[in-house]
Image (cartoon, rainbow, N blue to C red; front, side, top):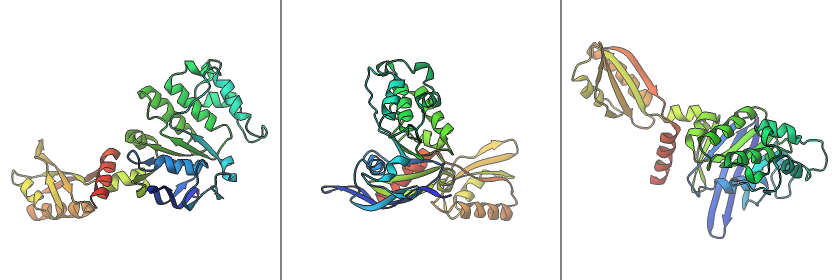
Length: 313
């Protein structure tokens, strides 16, 4: 896919602190892109650079092919929501969006407040003061103000971090509805949310990119769990499976009628090799393989494994 954003060697240093180092990645147009990392990994710094709120020390970035800069023309393509949005409490939701719209030079190229309030599910609360809004409602209003200029790229910094489950659900639903029409690049540490809505992910640690991939591909490729079911197995089969090259662990056998089920854990990168070894063992032992599939890990497991491995290197 054509990238909506391209980052090339993006670096930001504050004095002697390297907040971001040589970040390079492409963000596909129309995707929901989860930007992950522990606290202090550099996620907010990257978002501020892309929003034009701070300058990179070195490296470049472009949005829709337009170079990113503090006073750059790219700003017309970007909507930005800070981690904790603040509004004038005496203004209503509608007045807030009208106020934001007043900063645009004309009606052309911006969305009407009524349309935005409908998109984020606040039409019924449009004329209430924002000081009466819940945290989830304020976050949805923040997304609406970020959409005012009809941006091609929406930058969201921890959009659901402080919300209860209902508020998180509402925010994720808005993101789903925008998929394909607007590219969404958002930072978060709520990995379950990322797995539910994100097409692509990038994992950052200590300011450096660790991995980037389509979400589903990353989850499957990082999994080392294999579920094996066999006909004709015995009490000794588990030991034979544990002795296969690349196997680090075999769970206790579970009998299911005539079948025996085993969960194997493989060394990183050796899952396919282990699956092949299982087939050879079955052929040599007169066993019938009824199942030999890789089990997808959840994103939290993948994230912890990748970051722990990176820090141990």
